[in-house]
Amino acid sequence: MTDLTPAPETAAPAFGTWQRWSEGKPVNPKLTYRWRVPERLILGLRMRPEWSEKMHFCGMGHAANEWWPPFSHWNGYIRSIPDGTEWREAKDGEDEILWEGLDLLPCPFTGKPPRVEFKGRWIGAPCYQAESLSIHAWMVSSYGWTDAVRLQKTWNTRPALPPAPEMK
Image 1 (cartoon, rainbow, N blue to C red):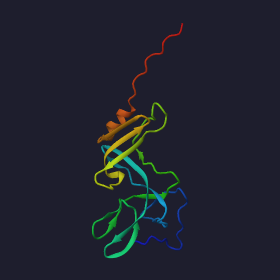
Image 2: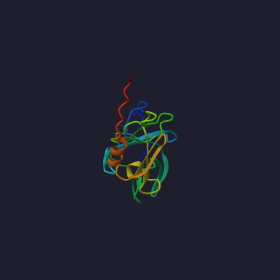
Image 3: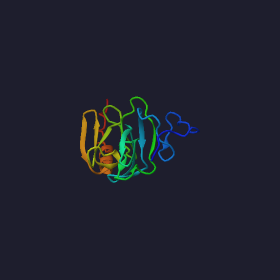
């Protein structure tokens, strides 16, 4: 059984400091936490997603109920999360998914980074179980990318600008 209360000699990590799940668990289930898993192959590209979610109160079957991340896996006997998962308290307004490893140029019209969303393999699937990616920036939206390498290459391909007219 996993106890989410820290040992008396264990202090909570400093705000904004990443901590491995295996070394300590969040102590306040009412807060929103930022999560990230180790780099893995997602849709053909090695990425490390980072996202924000609150803890869920989960039934443990044969043991007392506990607070776990919503992406935890229950096999009917034990609850688990991917090895190497890290967490920290989320800052206010920190709710977008960051896709480390997916290097995209900023929007050519606004200069802001594009927003990347995912569709999971099942309802409620975590972002590291993505089945497709979508990209959104200003007037551009493109859905259903099942190959992250092609998405990155296509988005980062910009047409050559015509030469400026000569001034006389």
